[in-house]
Length: 329
Image (cartoon, rainbow, N blue to C red; front, side):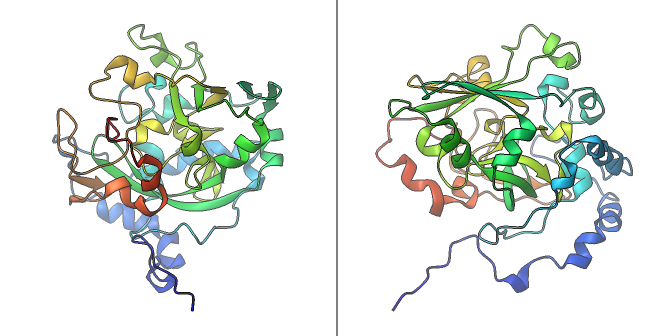
């Protein structure tokens, strides 16, 4: 007799947030904003804002807006309520536009059409493809994912997009390719943070082929049933929910398949603090703060952080026999 083993993060459908509650999130957000939200280092999160909807309204001119909402994949559920749409779209790390969290207005200057993506390196035939042509080839779906920032805050969001394995399939990499190197856009005329010469622009990230083809690796093109806002990485970003958020690179313009391990943006800046793997582990502290707990956006309470951010059932086997690697930063 087949016995299905329930995964650690799964909940019954009855435990999901009711649609009516989700639709009233603006009122809920106002109530939450009445109190301060503190992170481990004493940083206060911005409260929910009426201009949060203004941030999302900027996606209405996205040519892909009519593709959303897409059908939710019920395999990827959550053990917590979704973060408020306003906070998730106005509290952002995007160093291309500055080091503050409130960069969403600056990000609106980024032109996302035309947007061409290069796929090259160790592939059968290098090619370029426009984002809308890529979207037309991909099976879009929605997934509910945790997101854990290395700064010890977290959120839970409904990403829309497609499995990264589908992009790998389209790329047709050679069997000798071991990694995917991802390159983000570089345009300092509109992304003023890129005028900072002490940062190694453009933003670089990488995954092993096994990680890139793991079912959790997800190419994001939308959020909350809408096209992805620019401040969240439009038109194409990565989501690797078992890793710290800085691995989920935004504004991608190139996928290079290679047999050399990429050196990522933050690894170049400070390799002692930000390694290639960056898997979430509450038992391995950042050199300057603990990773044992996190503060969900919209909360003033700290909650325990889980190994691999709660996705160990999916990814733990990727790292077996790698005891010599600094997997968790």
